[in-house]
Length: 142
Image (cartoon, rainbow, N blue to C red; front, side, top):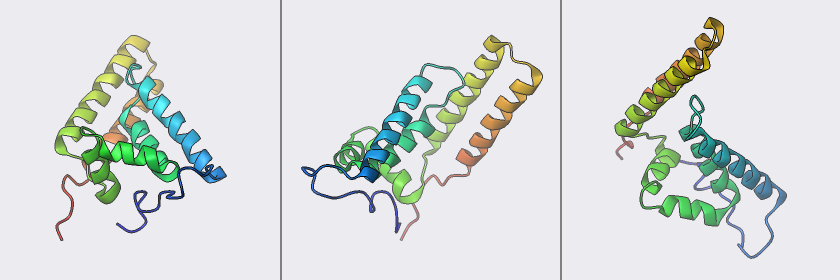
């Protein structure tokens, strides 16, 4: 896919200091990665979207980090499929939607949310779940 983060990453000499744009991408990546990590433990706060954003930011601002992410034996193939074709496996979709539903349910129950707040949470989760369900499951064949 032309213009994908994998192709447009900063590929300058790794020994030279990063540009101000690369630094901004790195700061954003760190912020998203931290939020994703926190989301693994806080009900209602998603993890996967923030980690995808972190990977996208790293791919723009840190070629070495991008290479490590793509080369990771467990997560690399899924990230590469996402970056190149916007593909999310069926297993990942089911797991993500189930975890979002469980987190929202637990958050609403434990948080004793009012109807308006609970409705906003449910509507947000439903929008993300629909968007995720509509992502392709396989890369297009040539």
